[in-house]
Length: 523
Ligand code: FAD
Image (cartoon, rainbow, N blue to C red; front, side):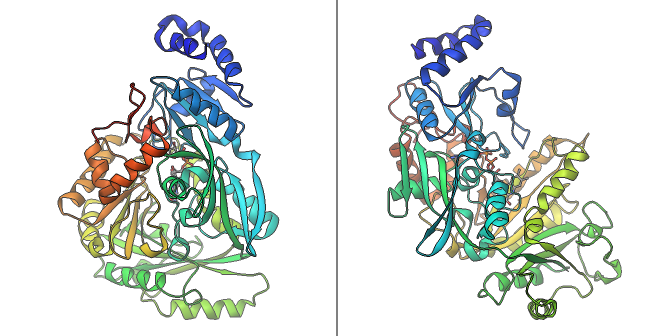
């Protein structure tokens, strides 16, 4: 009955007037606790867009589930059709349509957000169980504000969903110590591509657990995650220091990320910026405290087209004596070789520090550039190739900047679990490079996209040891190259957990086969 109804919607172009009736019929037949909207309804428009603003496709239905049971019903429903796919949509902060489904079913994971926040102590360690659709900023509120506890590993920006970042990795300035967010969860509840609700962990259904972590949504929809917690600090000393030479910048960054806890900062990131007097992205934009400007006289004459900044944070408690904090921070900074005089610092609350990008979002919304396209490019580049990358990409191709931050900082491979699905470069130290482009009004998005392609092409041609983070490819050959020797494991996991290729079609890896039995993409 449902399938007959669906067939009518899919095949009958005059069915628009019947759509509301059909939605209600399907909704009743599925016995959803949540709600369902047609893809035509204006409030579903968000499901056909994402933060990237580069792609737009219309789903058939937007489903707002109340929890895992609803999601399971929707996936099982799609499995009984020849053509329908299911995309979980976190907060739609993808760049290339990864959370979309063309003519399929989009599940709004945010509607499950409220349904689960639960504290637990396991082996004397605090954890929180959260919905896959919860925003990290809500996890912050629940944990830090209410209990003085915090996840160990964050993203820079917290209006991202737990399920969305765990499907990729979740990286920020704490990852050098604790690994990405995927290394900081101990249990997941997942709805697989067969519609089964399965609890998994390192020891229970471990293939599903590790497959889903960094699995680009291919093996299951995360409906609950158990996140490790630790005591949260009260305050953060937030510091930026500037380098004119890339080798000095990388030497200090690598030194900091390889030190023991207590011998380094609690957060280490870095960025590149054009060496020019530009309030938006030149050296005047770097100081954290606008009252204390950098004097350009400090920039060495030998400096090139770009400069580099290490961004650091030191955690402390309100009860710590200010002179103790000063002493420890001075000792740590004393080991670094940044340009004298080019240091800026502020003391902010831990929550204020974690919500720092939210402030940037508010500004970007106010000046209209938040809603414009964002052709972002994220890469992991091996330490062995980062100097070459700097010379050609940062110093030459991107010497005029990208209209937004250009992050570059080292991570340690040993903090990542190689059983997860994330693809990484070889070697212990690799750099995350994030080109967070904001395209000003009137400027060409195509030019930025073309420049991204040029960078990736150059990396490939030069044989750099690199991987795309938040990957996006058009061809199956590129996906195979991306996963390298992990490709067969990825395919095996797909065959096991989503054999009809129902999930996350927007990643453009597998295609649902009308014969309904086997995944295909010329495997
Ligand atoms: P979506 O974009 O909605 O979904 C991403 C993919 O995951 C899709 O394929 C979707 O189908 C799938 N998916 C979504 N929810 C689930 C679920 N519950 N279960 C299974 N699959 C699911 N990343 C970092 O690592 N560090 C950062 O500091 C960082 N900062 C960012 C700042 C901004 C402003 C933006 C826009 C992005 C940033 N990102 C960062 C990237 C971010 O991790 C990705 O956009 C990611 O996709 C999470 O976004 P989302 O929750 O909106 O997921």
